[in-house]
Length: 164
Image (cartoon, rainbow, N blue to C red; front, side, top):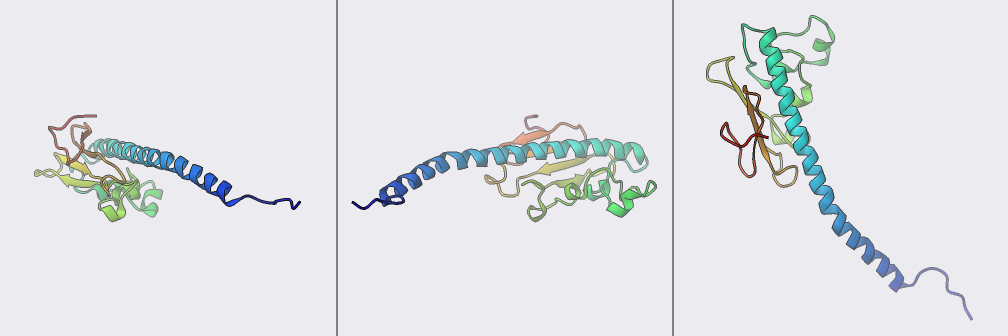
């Protein structure tokens, strides 16, 4: 009698079916975890921006809040020198955060839309939509000079939206 070596086709199909069932359970959970991590990163970045704006307004009292998000950052060569910081290159946030102003340059699935107030240096707003809604995140975030982070589920929040 001939001894069989290896696996039969039926055994291989059963193993593949089991792997597909496990993958169908695991992948959606992984995607939800990734979106939750992206949202947490966006909120953390908004808090960093708020803290940096307070430091900026203290350091440059004659200017007030920054005119652009990029004013809070600075190049590596500028920030390496102790006297390199200025009101247009304050070295308070990372360039990755400061330049994440469109879906193409998003930081961890979110981008940041900074707008100074009508009266320069007195107010600012930062809106944070997901780069790919439903894929990189589901919630939209907002903050301003009050330092309260607010969120919206399907639309961009404003000053009247629920705080975190």
